[in-house]
Image 1 (cartoon, rainbow, N blue to C red):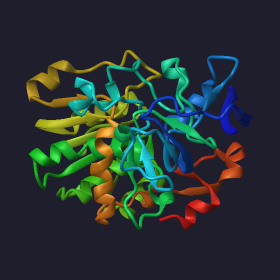
Image 2 (cartoon, rainbow, N blue to C red):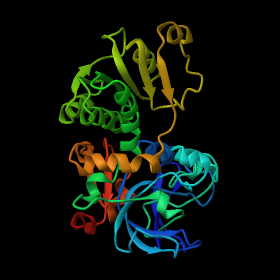
Image 3 (cartoon, one colour):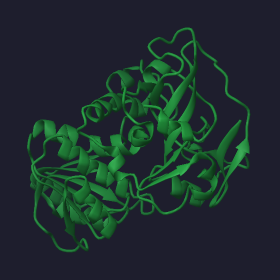
Length: 347
């Protein structure tokens, strides 16, 4: 079968690899029909593989269920579903607490399409066939009537933006929200869109990127042009989204006393980013950081999509054909989706 593979720094090509097989009664085999490019994918491709075999690409997807083990129910062959991008069992104590991105049965960062991070190859969604273990826990059925291409990004970047605002708006209904977006634009825009969907007050997107500011209005937010110097005000809920340590410092200054600052980045290029702990302590700022838990959050987010309150397709800026993936996977786009021709007919 064909698998889109990173074979060298900046090099993406189709490779012929063995087809996966059902190994356990709880497995499923799926055929991806629409795959979104994550914010992290271009960076992984730029750095390149850590082994001579390269690594499979793609982890945000909508898939067609091709086969299931005898222990799998509720996922009929031929149905569409969204796989968690994180491999998880759904049964260990950590998974049962909703922390499915830290499943006790698998190494940390056990994800599709990201072998360089965990050292384990689980395959990638830009493939003809993918094995999904623990299918009942890892596959969320696609609600009827929803275009697969429109929700291809939900399993990672959409849930990432959603979790940065949802729990804080539950405890502070109607609060104003600020998204400080200085990189990783789709996640920031998904956070803003989620805040609007969840009934936040005024949702503001601060950025120095003109495209992000334009798209902020499209998702119902107020754009705020900034160079991330000084301070533009204070907000009760702030999302820090980007790659510039200066942007993080600006987001901290923009958080009101006893407010919440949720960071969706770990600043890989600068592991020694300073934190003003004295300010955080004195003002009582609740600082949150960590990974999204895909399997646990997928049903919540898909529910909002099914109700028409969340429209991930508003953030998609490029849709390319499956056969174009190798040539176009790294081209500039806020959110790029690779789709098989049949995906446009499946909803």
